[in-house]
Length: 186
Image (cartoon, rainbow, N blue to C red; front, side):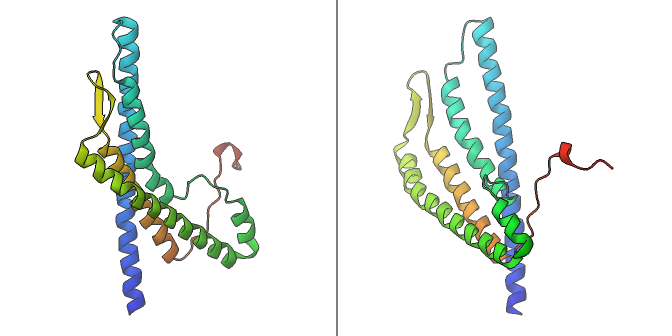
C-alpha cells in the first residue's frame, strides 16, 4: 500500500514537472520569436532609417540566457541533453539492468550538479533583487539582473527535480534517435 501511494505520488509529481517543463519550453520559444523580431527591427531600422535599436546587443545577451534556461528542463525531460548514450545503448543490449543502474547513477550525479547550481545562484538572485543591479549602458538601455538569476534558479531547481524523478522511476528503455532519411522506406 505504501509502495502504491509512493508510485502515485511520483507519477503525479512527474506529470506536474513535465507540464511545467513543457510550459517553460514554450516560453523559451516565444523569447526566440521575440528575439527574431527585435533583430529584424534593428536590421531594418539600421539600414532604412539609419537609426539602430540601441539596446539590441543587451537584449540579445539577456535573451540567450533566458532561452537556454527556459528550454533546459524540457530537454532534460525528453532525454535530449547533449551526452553520449552510445555506451549505454551497446551495454543495454546485453546487460539491461547494468545499463539502467548506470543511467540512474548518471541521473543522480546530474541532479546533484543541478542542485548545486540552484544553491549557488539563489544568493545572487537575492542580492540582485535587493540592490536593483542592472546591466547595459545607462541612458541608452538597461535591464535588471534579477529576472535572469530567477530563471536560472527555477530552471536548475526543476531540472534537479526531473533528474531525481528519473532516479526513483523505473528505468525506461532508451530510444535511439533516428533521422528520417535513414529510415527504411517500405
